[in-house]
Image: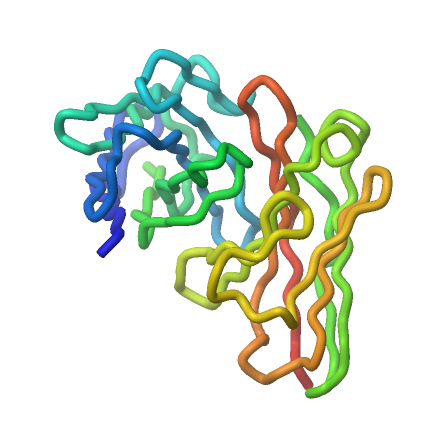
Amino acid sequence: QVQLVESGGGLVQPERTLRLSCPASGFTFSVYVMHWVRQSPGKGLEWMAGISSAGTNTFYADSVKGRFTISRDNSKSSLYLQMDSLRPEDTAVYYCARESISGNHGFDVWGQGTKVTVSS
Amino acid sequence: QSALTQPPSASGSPGQSVTISCTGTSSDIGRFNYVSWYQQRPGKAPKLLIREVTKRPSGVPDRFSGSKSGNTASLTVSGLQTDDDADYHCSSYAGSGRVVFGGGTKLTVL
């Protein structure tokens, strides 16, 4: 069963750090490009970051560049998002997502999401 | 990178067709044939409906179809069913590894 399961969300104060994890199962994790996408309450989806299959290339939205770091450990079939200097506007449900194997930038597998609340 | 523009809401009666637009720029939708559409039900993760403008993943009914003209992509849902009542999101590749989403459209089946 193909599955992504995010964890690590919670309530955090502004300017603090949080690390999200997303272990994968049911597919060969190491061959897929992976992404993080978030959704603020009542809002649309917002792409955050992407990472190549080998982890050698990373890409970020301007809104998080320099504050968030995407990484992966293919030996553990896991994706991560290190979030530093968190702001109230980072409050959202964070999803990890798998990009289709054909590299068409469509996300064909999603986790259930983990909620992050940034508030003092 | 700016978000793609979608109408906040759309509606139709069972059996009818409805089309949802998604407007970008010449740097995203207009430049690449990598437009995707997602269906999202309340409290659930998005589900891929359309990839590469027109292609349906296996298991997606052919009532869902996609198209593109210039900087605007469209999702058409034909033969509306009550089960289609959900939020719909578009996305496009924007170059340099980046992806941009629209603001989402809430489809109400009356």
